Length: 286
Image (cartoon, rainbow, N blue to C red; front, top):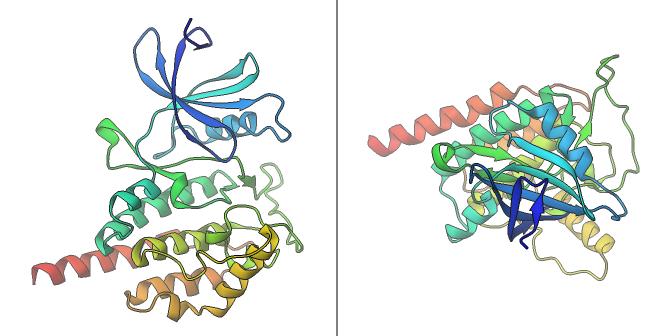
């Protein structure tokens, strides 16, 4: 007897794992549509899937947001059934021998900024911006970039009062240390500016092939985070972006100058990269 979900989906092979739980291939028994099925053990210490499914529901309809087909409990598992998507940008980066061209990064940047702006417009921070959490589409959406994995997302503004979350310090690092903003390392509560700074590190990772604070060895996770933080603090924006168009340094200077509760000018950041893209294209055909 093959495993089934909600008597509607057939469970296939494992295709990956998210920040919480495993992801499987699935098939809608009636329509034969192929889907992704995320499973999380109901006994898990910190269940996330119900929260994540609610978040996807709030974001439904946005460009680059996967559709949720079903959420519920099946046996020992919380189950989230959603659109099957293509490879992650980390996969793509590996396929491309761990270097992406400037043109590719600029095309991705435009879409990634749009996705983050949309999530922020729904009053949420993603808090784990990294290449693994952006996926390419499939079929007619093959060139679309999707944002996934909202297990660590947090509301930054109260819907009723419109109050921004308060500034706090001594917070533990949430997200992935490699792409964490400077303020996140320093224990400051995350806000919109931090998602954008993390995205900047993703751009430089794609262009350079690696970041200066990768591969640092340490005894414990805490010590490793401290080493990454030290290296990040001591690497100036100019050094990080050396040899690449000045727009990348401008992007970081802009993000780091934002106040805690300030609304970023997403259009300005997109324009920065769009104008560079046009200039590069003209240079190629000149």
